Length: 80
Image (cartoon, rainbow, N blue to C red; front, side):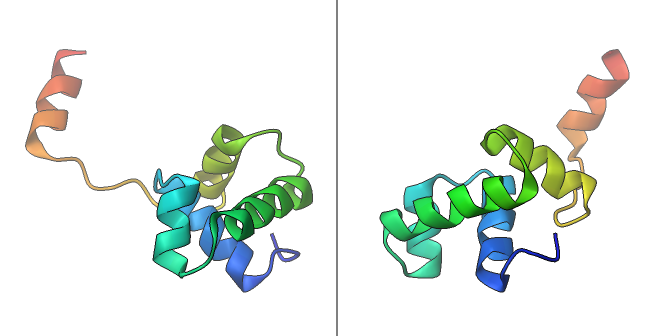
Protein backbone atom coordinates (compact mmCIF):
# COMPACT_ATOMS: atom_id res chain seq x y z
CA UNK A 1 0.00 0.00 0.00
CA UNK A 2 2.91 2.35 0.68
CA UNK A 3 3.94 2.07 -2.95
CA UNK A 4 0.72 3.68 -4.17
CA UNK A 5 0.78 7.38 -4.95
CA UNK A 6 -1.74 9.68 -3.31
CA UNK A 7 -3.73 9.78 -6.56
CA UNK A 8 -3.71 5.99 -6.84
CA UNK A 9 -5.05 5.78 -3.28
CA UNK A 10 -7.82 8.19 -4.23
CA UNK A 11 -8.68 6.06 -7.25
CA UNK A 12 -8.70 2.90 -5.12
CA UNK A 13 -11.05 4.57 -2.65
CA UNK A 14 -13.43 5.59 -5.43
CA UNK A 15 -13.32 2.09 -6.95
CA UNK A 16 -14.22 0.68 -3.54
CA UNK A 17 -17.16 3.07 -3.36
CA UNK A 18 -18.48 1.51 -6.56
CA UNK A 19 -17.59 4.21 -9.07
CA UNK A 20 -16.91 3.39 -12.71
CA UNK A 21 -14.04 4.98 -14.65
CA UNK A 22 -16.29 7.70 -16.07
CA UNK A 23 -17.51 8.67 -12.60
CA UNK A 24 -13.98 8.64 -11.18
CA UNK A 25 -12.79 10.83 -14.06
CA UNK A 26 -15.53 13.35 -13.30
CA UNK A 27 -14.79 13.32 -9.58
CA UNK A 28 -11.05 13.87 -10.06
CA UNK A 29 -11.27 16.16 -13.11
CA UNK A 30 -9.11 13.89 -15.27
CA UNK A 31 -9.71 11.93 -18.47
CA UNK A 32 -11.02 8.37 -18.50
CA UNK A 33 -7.71 7.31 -20.06
CA UNK A 34 -5.89 8.71 -17.04
CA UNK A 35 -8.22 6.81 -14.72
CA UNK A 36 -7.56 3.59 -16.65
CA UNK A 37 -3.83 4.16 -16.19
CA UNK A 38 -4.25 4.71 -12.45
CA UNK A 39 -6.47 1.61 -12.10
CA UNK A 40 -3.94 -0.53 -13.98
CA UNK A 41 -1.11 0.75 -11.78
CA UNK A 42 -3.09 0.09 -8.58
CA UNK A 43 -3.83 -3.47 -9.69
CA UNK A 44 -0.24 -4.10 -10.72
CA UNK A 45 1.35 -2.61 -7.60
CA UNK A 46 -1.00 -4.50 -5.30
CA UNK A 47 -0.75 -7.76 -7.22
CA UNK A 48 -4.48 -7.85 -7.92
CA UNK A 49 -6.24 -9.33 -10.94
CA UNK A 50 -9.34 -7.11 -11.15
CA UNK A 51 -11.44 -4.35 -9.62
CA UNK A 52 -13.31 -6.81 -7.43
CA UNK A 53 -10.09 -7.82 -5.71
CA UNK A 54 -9.23 -4.13 -5.37
CA UNK A 55 -12.50 -3.50 -3.51
CA UNK A 56 -11.86 -6.41 -1.16
CA UNK A 57 -8.30 -5.19 -0.54
CA UNK A 58 -9.54 -1.65 0.17
CA UNK A 59 -11.91 -2.96 2.83
CA UNK A 60 -9.31 -5.35 4.26
CA UNK A 61 -6.78 -2.52 4.56
CA UNK A 62 -9.33 -0.19 6.16
CA UNK A 63 -9.13 2.32 3.32
CA UNK A 64 -12.92 2.30 3.18
CA UNK A 65 -15.35 1.16 5.82
CA UNK A 66 -18.79 -0.40 5.40
CA UNK A 67 -21.60 2.12 5.41
CA UNK A 68 -23.77 1.95 8.48
CA UNK A 69 -26.68 -0.36 7.94
CA UNK A 70 -30.06 1.23 7.53
CA UNK A 71 -33.19 -0.16 9.17
CA UNK A 72 -34.29 -2.25 6.14
CA UNK A 73 -30.89 -3.98 5.98
CA UNK A 74 -31.08 -4.80 9.67
CA UNK A 75 -34.54 -6.33 9.22
CA UNK A 76 -33.40 -8.41 6.25
CA UNK A 77 -30.38 -9.68 8.16
CA UNK A 78 -32.57 -10.62 11.12
CA UNK A 79 -34.55 -12.94 8.83
CA UNK A 80 -31.42 -14.66 7.49
